[in-house]
Image 1 (spheres, rainbow, N blue to C red):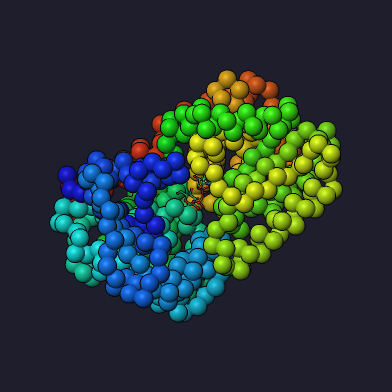
Image 2: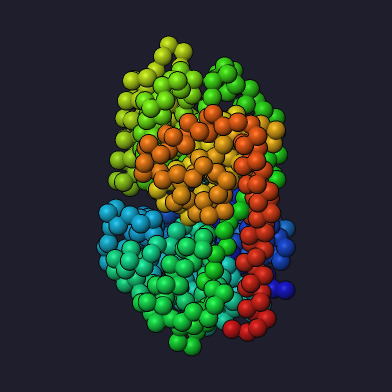
Amino acid sequence: MGRLVVVSNRVGPLKDTGRAGGLAVALVDALTKTGGIWFGWSGEVSEEGTFGQLQTQKSKSVQMVQVDMTQADYDAFYAGYANRTLWPVLHYRLDLADFDRRFEQGYRHVNDRFATRLRPMLKPDDIVWVHDYHFLTMASNLRVMEVTNPIAFFLHIPFPAPEILAALPNAGSIVRAMLAYDLIGFQTRRDASNFRRFVREELGGVDLGDGRMKVGSREVIARAYPIGIDAEAFSKFAMSPDARRNISRLEKLLGGRQQIIGVDRIDYSKGLPERFKAFERLLEDYPENRGRVSLMQVAPPSRAELDAYIDIRRELDELTGHVNGKFAELDWTPIRFMTRSFPRRALAGIYRASRVGLVTPLRDGMNLVAKEYVAAQRAEDPGVLVLSRFAGAAEEMQEAMIVNPHSAEEVAAALQTAITMPLEERRDRWQAMFDRLCANDAVAWSGKIMADVQAIKRNGR
Ligand code: ADQ
């Protein structure tokens, strides 16, 4: 069996630092099985950029290789096309998308540069696995460089309906470039079917069944591989000394009151203002919760230099002030809004101390917080997950209270049901979700993708 070569915008960590998410764990696990390389951007901007020296680090059979980019690359590729164009469009937010020709040029250039740096590291037997919207077109650059290895791709964020994607200038050309991958993995069946429909309707592709497609002479697989978390490990985190310390601090603070927890990067896709308004509606429509139920929102800032992100931060500060001003009592604050991050064990404790997990993105590839919340619960007395129908996780977690995040009334009613739900029903719903999380964990996820790529390799492309 050949090595695995993973490409993603940011790489690592290779070792458990207490902060690594399930994705890093799954990729390190897959890489350790075969040995290999994990290649990506160093996070640094320099004058030489992608022409500069490769920075390498090795842990056993896995090598981490990173390269800088120039300020111009960063502006056009990362802050530009990836985060101002593709991120909003793929999250169905055409109203926030910035279509600038220079962004697309910069994006294609950086994809080509990363391919150029990767090319000499590849061996004939390697399997290449590229991640996410930063590198939609990279396989097509590798093919021009005569790379014939199997190349898989996984999109961590949604793939929108063709009616939305068609608004992206050159969408057809971008999707055609994606066909240079042999396998294209999506979070949900809906995303995979949106992709196949685009390929059929816009590029004249033909469905061969079971996610296989033919476009001209080219055959690709476009299927759903819902990403999982390291469920057992996360559930153990929730019982660790760090977690227990946080649980007792929170329990002391709450003094028998209940807490609803939200954990998200600050991003317009996460539906945070809508969530705060739904919580306000809960206090208005079900006044018995005043003084008894609070919302804790943990939200580390991300991409803070982008206007859309500055606006949302301001809106959240205002909403917090508004709700707290209106309802706070001497010994009770309705919303606690914290813009910091926590180590994973501490986070697991916070989830476990919260009666309701509130996960209400307007659009989300999967949403790992929903899975982490469930994994962290006490089997004998679990909390309730309230989950947006627009999170990829909703496809697999139907035992959650599924809601439309745009409707404050509906979310408030679901919160009320969650807060008052009898123990037996909480246990039944939780057990079904937890069993599924353990069966479809992060290692099973990468294993399925790897097995399908191996099959492509065996059968020849
Ligand atoms: P994200 O948009 O980052 O990921 P999500 O899946 O929720 O969204 O993952 C966030 C991760 O960050 C979780 O593991 C969470 O615990 C952690 N996190 C968030 N806030 C934190 C805090 N304050 N402190 C510590 N940790 C925090 C993208 C896609 C998702 C997809 C994932 C994985 O947007 O849809 O599920 O990739 O494929």
